[in-house]
Length: 272
Length: 272
DNA sequence: TCGGATTACGTGCACCGTAATGATC
DNA sequence: GATCATTACGGTGCACGTAATCCGA
Image 1 (cartoon, each protein chain N blue to C red):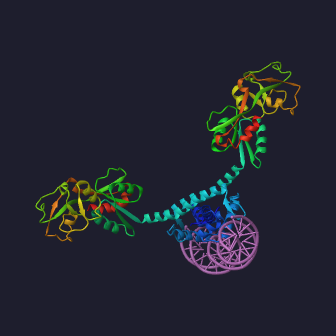
Image 2 (image 1 turned 30 degrees about the vertical axis):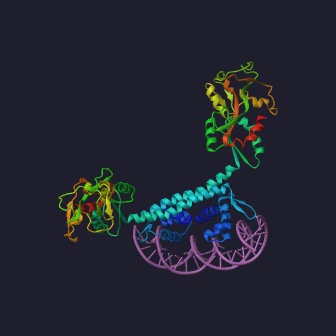
Image 3 (image 1 turned 180 degrees about the vertical axis):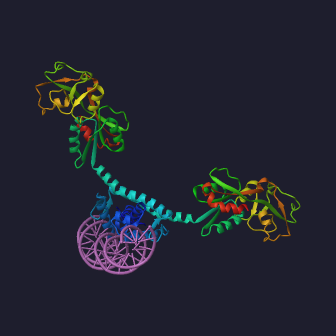
């Protein structure tokens, strides 16, 4: 059986062209390579090199052997990588979500229900989430539209309504509701990491003027923040609901049908 | 990089189930395997085994690693095999033919024209010959029908006419020619190793009665043997040509178009 | 004279075997 | 007691480095 170190050296020589260059790359001496190449020929039992006086090069056999060597080395490297990835995946639950808000409820539940597991989370649009669930990138995903895939299991996991808060002095501060299209050309304060909401605003507001940091500007907020008692109410502002259908969403937590049993405790908790 | 010997030992353990069984198979001691498996875990960096008190077994990581190991070992083995085969092929000319007669002319020519090359020959029907030429099993083939493949180069290389010899006392001994179908139900002496001729006789003679060894029976022969001065004429027999079209064939020597230049000297010799 | 391949020689490490221990059936 | 895994210890093969040689640009 041909040991890996011989293939490594052959591959390096094939790539570098000379023994000395390969030796330097491998942090080995030239004599070591000379011997290894001889040994390789000995083990395989055929000539692999053309030997000039102070010139060594691969013949056709050698080129073929080097090509095979590359493949074996590639596969050999992959063993460690793949097994590590598999091990990592086996005690990691990856959650993909279209928005951060539902994660605030789900992640703590997952963490406490599946002790010892690492929980990773990521914000993505719905399409890559579905793709990622299928290919194993995610074990759980949160969508803002109900899926239709037969191979999935899902349940609702909360709702969210988008509001806008305005300084009391704002011309629209007296309104009972506002349409997104009415925000055209306005400077609005928008936080990053809001998931699909960002796409929604881009789509529905003509020529939006989002700013990263400002005060006295309109600011989006949602039912989630309004209901959180830890967030103090700002008396200088009024909170006005947005009227577009899309500003009220239902979230759905989904997993592969095959994982339904595994995540049953989680779905049960969330339904309570 | 994971050395091959570690993968070998992992694979053996996965197959045998216990370290001691694997150790015996590999002609190694148990301690050697214990250490190797530990080392493997160390190199990859994840647990590969479930450790009972005196029980060792693969966990899911280990099973995956063993599966990968099998593939790498397979590939590693193939390097030597394939390179040897390639080397062998590079100084072997394999000739496939549908009949032995044209080979008697071709093989000596090949041997003398391509010094140092090993010449191997084989009798096969036309179809596998064409297939074998394409896949590299043969570099030269002899057909008894003109090929049509654009990717081939070929030239005629002789003809052969089938005759039948009869004892002078035979009822048909006075005939000028005989049709194969007239040989129905007759005992005929047939030599083995006559290539496609055998198939032809089977096909065209109703209910043939071929014998392996006999005398005073009809015997096939062909122009090749009749023209050979070294074969004495048997005065007790008459030679009668067969009349079916198929009993007169033209042979064609063919190679891949890409080999045309390589075999040009051979084709030239044969055309003289 | 420098760079590259090869040979000669000594060395250290890594893998192995033997022996002993612990544990389970 | 038999079998299996593991630990401890001592040996050895083999891949490596250093040094020296040969050869060609």
